[in-house]
Structures are given as structure tokens and as C-alpha cells.
Image 1 (spheres, rainbow, N blue to C red):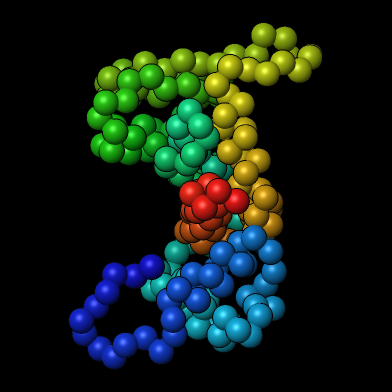
Image 2 (image 1 turned 135 degrees about the vertical axis):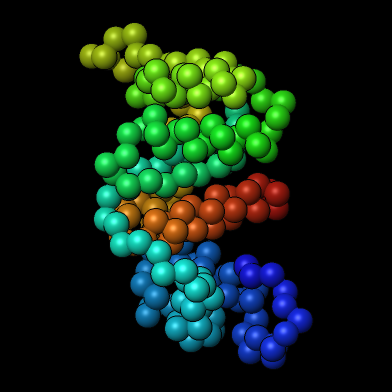
Length: 191
């Protein structure tokens, strides 16, 4: 939501209803034009959701997610599909270090085991544990990796996140924030 401004006229729409409409769309997966009328005109909700940023029009993307031990989202970084996993994770490492100075231990998938990423992690004073598959032909629950996979499972409960229909990375990232924020609100409300 935008910050309160003391300039201009008051918004003609209730921003709580705009947020409820965005949560409804993330959960139901419907289109903007199929938004129920009690949320207000779909153009208004869409305008508040999009903001002013033009953004890029990119089809393929990768989701890099940092979660805590309970699977709650800490940080999300969406990148284009042609970016290496290690390059996308470097952004996450830097942001994690800025926010959580006390954090030392990280766990990562074998796809993130690259020299440049490990050098960056060492520079930022992280100890990175790489979780490797012991037997690629059979299924085993891997330690600590299941937490991230469970978080991805929670994210795709929202129909908007099952497939990436949106071309813009910022719209897709915003839907991830809406979905995970709604999950945290449900946990707080004990539903």
C-alpha cells in the first residue's frame, strides 16, 4: 500500500477493500475483469495494484526464496530464466546480511553450489550447508530442503502462483507477497 500523503484529495476508494480484492484475486486466480462488483471497479483495483512502474515484459522467470526454519518467507527474488541460480542467490545473500546481522547458517540446494556464490557467502560471513541427494533414483526427504519445498507448496495454493501468467516480474513478486502475507494473517487468526 502506498504511504499516506498530505497532498491532493483523499482517495475515493477504501484501500482496505482494494487489498481485499487483491487477496481475492491471488486466491481465486480469476481475471481482473471478473472481480466481484462489491470490491469496486476492477480498473481502480488494478490501478492501485500496478502503481506507477512500467516494468519489464519478460515471460520466463525463476523464484529465489529465503525462508526461516518454519517456512515463513523472509525474502523473495524473482529473476529472468536466463539468470543462473547462483547469480540470483547473491542478491538474496546480500539482502539477508543487511537485515539479519546475527544470521550465520544457511542451507541451499546443490544447484547453488558455485564458486562465486560460496565466495560471496564467505565474504558475508555465512556458513552455507549444501543439501545433496544421496540416491538420485529413489525418493528421500532431504534435511532442511523440505522446508523450502513446503513454502513453494503453500505459495501455489493461490491460483495466481500456480502458473506465471503475468509478464512482469514485479507483478508476480507482488502476488507472492500477497499470498504469503495472507498465510501469515491466517496463522495469526488461528484459522
